[in-house]
Image (cartoon, rainbow, N blue to C red):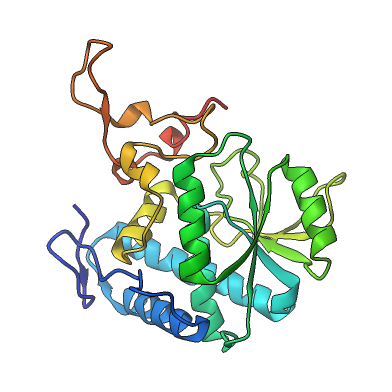
Length: 270
């Protein structure tokens, strides 16, 4: 059960009103709605240390995004988006920052890029399509290895100079990253921006659930880190029940019940 936030309306389970609109909103209205929810979250009295930490992480991430918006124009910025929980939090914070910086105009476009797994989940693709509709993403898709995908994307959209990425410290190759890192040698040149680099797994889910952000349905089936169908499985740490026969269906608890960072990728083959 989620802890309540004092001063922020929520139900008996600690969930706040959903951000999911009945119909897609124009970008200025969408960003204003998201900003109102985030502002209420930040203004509320946190009942627990975890909620206080999430509030602080939110403030830091918004500061990083606002710095990026000072350094680059919207035409120079893009968002790496694959429908996962981390880039979803990043997207919500980016839309919030657009309102705070008064950049959420009717003509603004949220440039984004989706590097598709070689063996994509239908549920992931469906959630990405939903995100395009509900968040107004101008999404380019590339079904190829990451380096080649970014090369093609920057060739197709040469104005882009910096890309927001939802990498966290505990992800592969994330240990030494900072908020702003130029790409390594041999990669196409752009600035990688990591606003959620220092968020912990449990903080990501606390933010998503308290703000009522819709997420990919695979997370409710025990998946905690999403890749492709050939290398991603429900997390064994979330196995529920006592099924012993091969014919018995194994159930898994939802992703948000996992707590430890080091267990997040137990369902991945790499």
